[in-house]
Image (tube, rainbow, N blue to C red; front, side, top):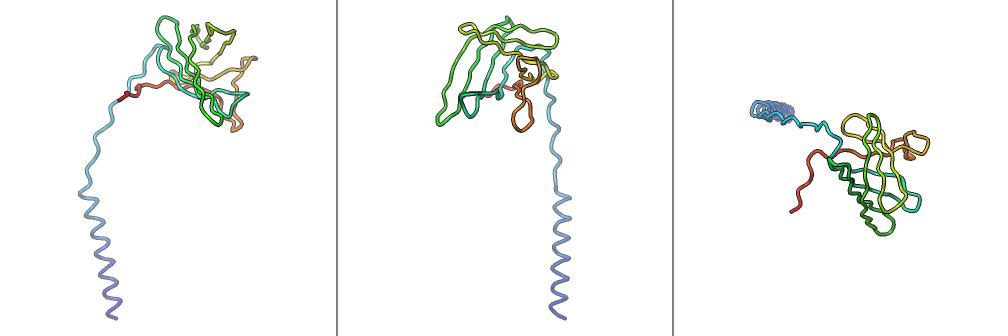
Amino acid sequence: MLKKILFLLGLALLFTSCDGEKKNEQKLPPLKAIEIPKTISGLYAGELPCDDCKKKQVKVQLDSLGEALVEEFFIQDSITKVLSKATYVDSAETVTLLFKETNKKWVFKKEGSLSLVYLDLSGKPYYMESGIAYQMLKILNKPVKK
């Protein structure tokens, strides 16, 4: 009987201490709204298909004058970084990158204001084995280097 009473008292203390914590909780301040730029220029990052490597990560900086700086990271047993310059053409539905040193061309479909979906030669989205389209996402707040 004494054990049952002690058990019930312990449960009562447990529940009352939980209620006390709820009363002392502070509400977090609301997050500041992020303003989405209306222009295509900015920093993009994502993954693109790669025939000769396990994975290819890319970062693309599009400026307001139609120039692009492209960083490609080819991942195998090690990581190889290739830096290229390109120009880009922004149409209503697509963005086309034309590389200066090579005969390479990338075409992306605009998906909203924050995503560029990579298109294959027939103009359709190029999909990963997982069923997700290869794409680049716009980075709204560029990371600060320390």
